[in-house]
Amino acid sequence: MLSKKGTGGRKLMGRFEYGADLLQALEEMVEKEGIKVGTISLIGAVQEASVGYFNQATKEYKTIDFPENMEILFCTGNISLKDGKPFVHVHIVFGDREGKAWGGHLLPGTKVFAAEFVIEEIEGIHLEREYNAVTSLSLWQK
Image 1 (cartoon, rainbow, N blue to C red):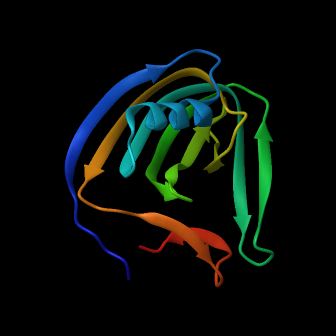
Image 2 (tube, one colour; image 1 turned 90 degrees about the vertical axis):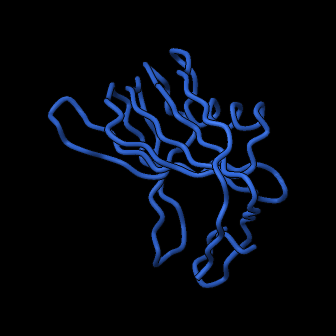
């Protein structure tokens, strides 16, 4: 088990612009603010979405595209370092017009209709992602 204790840092709240790529907007915000470790939460709606599903047997991501308007029912993620640079890792759940839920790992191509975010920085800890041979994922190692 890996466990570290940090202290609360800055808390940023805001919204992303209509038409923005959601993942890119999050990455740009983290880079601009110099956040190296933290948490992300977000609500809103999208014009279209793209998520990934990691197949544990094949150790490959499958991309799933949703070319429709959907609500963001839940969105959570974290910020840590990968290859020495801030890395945004986000999972998201959407609701369609029939109330069905769909979700996965947020990928580029998810276009914002309206999105309000909270980003909380965590200070005093260092978390770096490195390749893990058992899972074939980049996981926190340090």
